[in-house]
Amino acid sequence: MATDDTMLSPINLGNPDVVTVREVAEIIIALTGSRSPVVFKPLPPDIPKQQKPDITLTRQKLGWSAKVAFRECSQAYTLGRA
Image 1 (cartoon, rainbow, N blue to C red):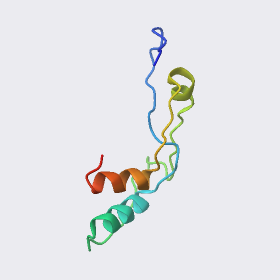
Image 2: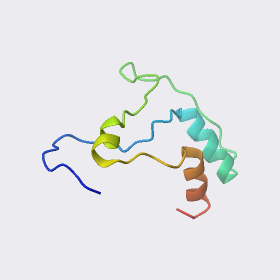
Image 3: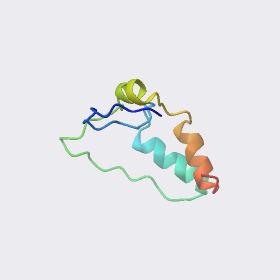
Image 4: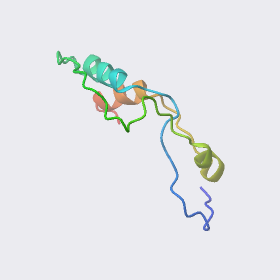
């Protein structure tokens, strides 16, 4: 993978698919068979309600993007295949 040596800013390697914390909790509970409840607490005022990583720079500079969806990755990790 070729890189630009003049690049000085951080690069987001996140997945641009939007997954809520609730969805993450529900996926993990389902995959592990847990009976844990999902507990809702108020968000701090400075936290955005929805975030979507911008991986444009990652695609441009590194030619990289996530190939595996969060649910699929979580399932592989939970089953010990990660």
